[in-house]
Length: 219
Length: 219
DNA sequence: TCCTCTATATTTAGCCT
DNA sequence: AAGGCTAAATATAGAGG
Image (cartoon, rainbow over all chains, first blue to last red; front, side):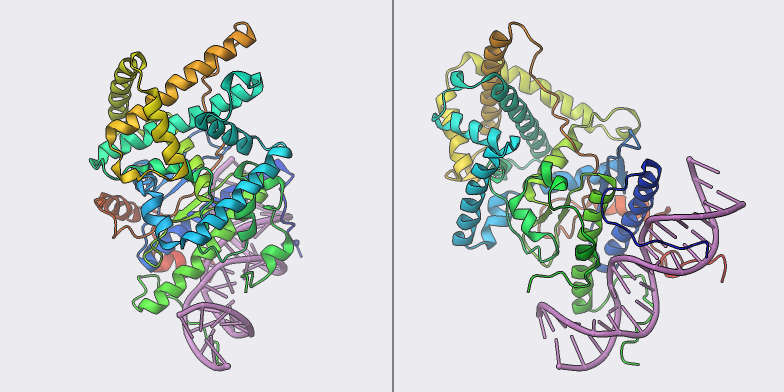
């Protein structure tokens, strides 16, 4: 047979061309599913894809639409939306777990946690800025820069929306705490334990078992 | 046969229960595909789902991850093709200019302690963010900027005139997919709806023909 | 309700043009 | 390189527990 599809290995597709083809196809499929979700469930959706194959960010259904939805999301204050329905205890537990993980990651060289820690330390006055090493300062700089942009962005969006009472500042706190929703789907554990930047190196990788199992819920 | 799956009509699922079930299943599938895309094509992804079934926005792989990628997306300079018909860029520029002005004033002031207090309070979740207004966030912004200046200064001293550290922050974000759900409980206008509807008239819309018929060319 | 099952629908990798 | 084809892989609607 000519059209024999081999069993797929769920790891990075080595061949560049194949990877690109796969990406394009899957992107298309994604869009379709997004549209279906929208139609079937009356859910508003938008997508933004920034791929290495296309210098232009693609936005669906439009850049404006994406930005609108995104700004809505960014405006949702964690205090109002997420924390509310969590019982405080669980929230604190997660937070504590995160703190511990942070320590761990710091030791294993994860940048982000380290930087966050430094930044918080500085803000708390527990760390003397002038005692930081050059690299730390660089990283901290970068981190804060990112953060500033977030603030500015939010601020602009907020003013654009005209509501100044829904200040999304709580995102700062969010930086330390991973909110745990009801992700009952597959990769829950890594949600809580890993940093975005490093995930694909760790267990974000989809294993055949993971993907293939018809039921990956946690019960 | 018991498990007779009927051909699906691709329109809004009338039955509420079915709609919810469908939404949940499809959301799950979406997440999975997102993870696959990430793994197979080395693409960073994130998703946010705001559904009417869950007052809490769900973020994958995490809220902070989503925000990071999103802020990156928002940072993409909207040059050329994207901004047309949309003057948000101009709007942002004006705001930024105003920010700069205020910042200047801020730098000459000595309210840093107060701002620091605010920021720290926010970080620890001890300050009710809803009581912070526009001015506060601006001040906070200024504070951080000042902070950065300090750091930069110090760093430059250490580097003996090395390159500046106001990093561009475009950290990662090869891709971001943001499906967002029902916004009924938010006070945002529904302009988004128009955009989506308009798009549906084009190509990505799901029609029975489009979705239902796998391949109409050969059967 | 939420889960599991499974028949069927849909997606997509590999191959072709 | 873009698009079609096909079968394997995957997703999911509907039914039952």
